[in-house]
Every structure is written in structure tokens, then in C-alpha cells.
Amino acid sequence: MISYDIGHSGQHLSFDDTVLAHFDRHRQTRIWHREAGGLLFSRLALPAIDICAITGPRRTDRRGRYSYWPDERAEQREIDEMFRRGLHFVGCWHTHPEDIPSPSIVDRRNISDCVRRSQHALNGFVMVIVGRASTPDGLFVSVCDASNVHVLQLSAGA
Image 1 (cartoon, rainbow, N blue to C red):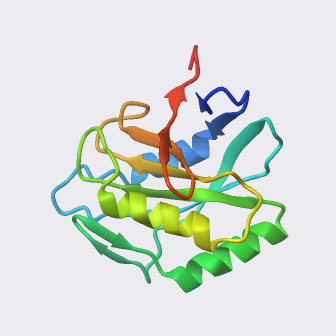
Image 2: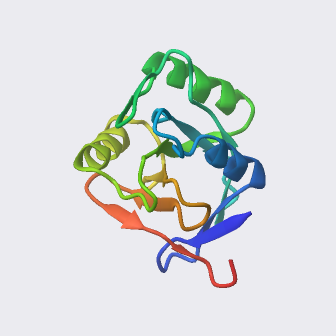
């Protein structure tokens, strides 16, 4: 498990080992690997946001070496199913074919649009980009509101 501080809010975001293993399985370490992505879910026991479930990629997603378009209908079904299980959608993840990933302009626009279009009680959504380097160096972890991407830093001792 690794944890990130969420600014000065007193909240922290953590990823279960099963989620980290899922990220690792989909890193684009070979030239023929395509981008992958999916959704992140938590039980939301504030001030802790423990991401304990992950989805994707799906056979119905469109994936290229430098692009990823999720099946939005499948995503909505996943959100509804996880909610019935007591899990809340808190964000998205996808891969990039770079060692230390950073969000593209398209990534920033997509997550901001998602925050604006969704009905939720959160201040923003989590966006994780998984690079080729191993965890934690190969993870870009942020919380995104309707206009900004706020990069998170590893918690002390993580």
C-alpha cells in the first residue's frame, strides 16, 4: 500500500496492493503494448480515501500506443455495480508509454469535463497515470477539480 497527502486538507489517498498490482500488469513496457485504463473505487471513510477496487481495460475500449478511449457505457455499468457493493467512483487511471508520466492537454481536459458532467459530492476526481517506471516513481497521482490538476506527493514514510 502507498499513500499520498491531499494538500493541507488532512485527508490522504491510498492504493491497496491489489490496485498497485493491476497498475503494474498494464505498464507499457514493450513497444507493442497499447494504452490501458479504467476506473477507481473507494469505500470513502474520510479523512481516508482508500482505493480498493479498479476496473479496466475492457475488450470494448479503443486502445492505441498513444491513445485510449474507454467504453463509456461499460464504465457507467461498472459505476452502478460498484455502488451497489458500497464502493464509490473516485476517479480514473490510464497508462502512458513514458517512464515518468505526466498528463497531456487531452488528459487534463477529459478529467475536468468528467468532474463537471458527473453528479457527485466530491471536490474532484483522482487521476492516475501509470508510466513505465516501477511504483511509485512511475505513477502520476493527482486530484482534479473542474479547472485544475493538483499533483499529490507521497506521504512521509511511504
